[in-house]
Amino acid sequence: MPIFTTATRCLVEVIEAGSIRRAAEILNTAPSAINRHILNLEAEYRTTFLERLPRGVRATPAGRLMAEQIRRWQADLERVSDDLAKLRGQERQQIAIGIMECFAGSFFAEVLAGIRKQYPDANIVVRVGGTREMLTLLEGGDIDLVLGFNMPPSSDYWVVETIPISMGVAVAPEHPFAGRASVSPAECEKESLLLVDESLSLRPLIDTLFPNASPWSKAPLTSNSIVMIKHAVRTGDGISILTRFDVRDELKTGQLALVPLDAPNVRENLAICMRDQSSVTPLGLAFTQAIVAAVRRELSS
Image (cartoon, rainbow, N blue to C red; front, side, top):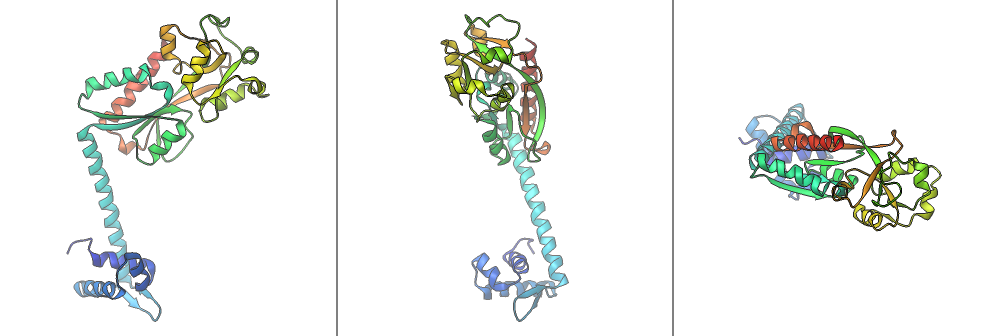
């Protein structure tokens, strides 16, 4: 007989519910129909799966054995279905990636160009958002890989690689800080400091630099948009504490300068995360390797 039938499902539901009536409510089926299915199953296997009691039912040893085996078969079938889905994904060469806004410019475009040479037929979806949003999508199975900062520890995903990233002070090219070897947090505190808000992973690290929070009261701009903050820095409205990846394109065009921040112990941790090691496809591995190589090239330049 087939492993998964209406009768076997009825048996498992009745044993779990402890009552044919309650199982009937769950399955939206008449109690008499459920009882008939189980009686037919007992006749087929020539054994009794349920002990009928004045109030409810109780599984016999044979019933418990059958229910446990059915659950194992179901779990095995689900695993096989997952494995087949992964194989289909490999065959289609598709991947969904979540990245933070600072990587959405030329950096990731260059990574994509390299991947396209290896996988010209790949279907690549890129989502841009904050760390928490991307991790929620990763844990929910909506994306396959996340590139972001300061990922909190979790058993719900696999951290493939972490790379510490130093912060710097973004200034307009004509600002007195431009060309300096470094700038201290105390010097930044005397300037008009443009701040990223609490939704971005960089903000808690900035907070540690200023325990008295004095720049907060006079900050001319606080925003969750790095693009807006960079524009304000370019127009001379102030300075901002950012990473090299936040201002990568502006550094290349000379629109901004990034001066090293004299706070060597305060760094962001760049992380590449996937759901788990078993979900890694050749395309996902290629992306991971390409991103790590690109980050290391950027930091050494």
